[in-house]
Amino acid sequence: MWPTNGKIHKSVGVGEVYDHAFHRLASISQAPTAPQNAVVERLLARCRVSDQRVRERAEDWFVLEKDQIPKEEEANIRKALVVLQKCAEEWNDAGLFSRVLEACRVVENVAGLGVDAVVSAYKVFGWQPLVDLAGSRTDVREMVSRLASLATEENDAELASWAQKQEDRLLTDLGLIAEADIPWMIEMISGREQQMFRDIVLPQLVAQNYLVDFWVSFISQAHAAADASPTLAACVVECAQDLVTGLAAFPTKLVESKFPKGCLQSDKNSAETLRIIHLCIEIGLPELCGLIFSKMLDASRAGVFHLICPHIPSN
Image (tube, rainbow, N blue to C red; front, side, top):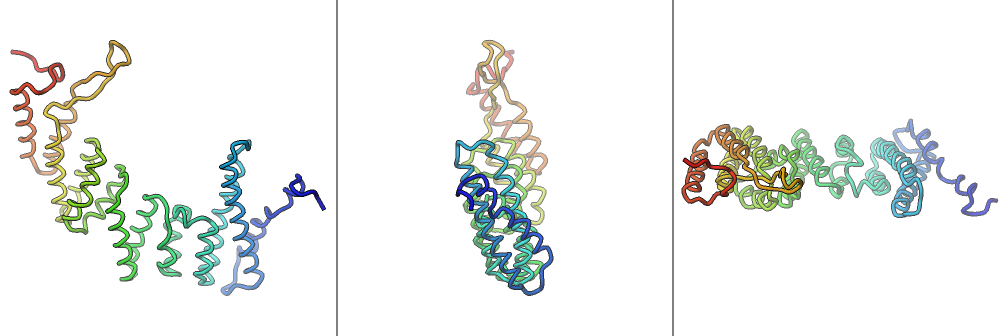
């Protein structure tokens, strides 16, 4: 009736499917009816259309108002995900659940599903439909940790075995660890052998050249949990020794010079030494403080420290 690709043609499309489907699926029967199945299929198709539109808009550099349409489409996909998962669980249809994950792109980002929804799906379908979910490291860590806890609660040996393998994989390939990830890492390390930390985890942390702040936070948190884990107790000692060994006799830092303005110059960083001394006392390893003082004394006698900074007054 109307020319294709015209304004009227574009305005009359599958856009109404969302409202119609959400209304029809707000209350569902225990077993799917033919009309409900039809609505579900149309909603799955609509989610795929939305995903394609979002991708096309993101790739089109010449489209104005790039943000509004993708946001609306993404919001509808998220709402459809909730509705469709409810249908799949009510009808105990694992195949439908897998198709929902594919249509809503959850297979590429588990954050779209959320941990509570993962748990809900596990209780209905078991863990198999969930094993291929991907996402950021943080999302996967959270999902695996929750499923490991759930395996214990449900006494599910098969899920527990799978979760432990996933945890081992995550520890073998840590990626970037932020300070916010330290509690997760400590939880993973605590139940494993000391050799895994020494041979697999520690080299990855050392290779990332973390600043003193990270190591102080990690060692402090590991020490707080060390009473229940011999591995963590050994981890605290080893990391503290490495931290002291790597500490310069007189640490320096770069600061902006007053003249010439804008240039950087070295300045003493006694705060770093004091933090490590305080840490050694806090974790019950005062003998490491002696190593720090010996290192400072040797450097002073040999004159290997910076001639200007830190400033050592002459007698």
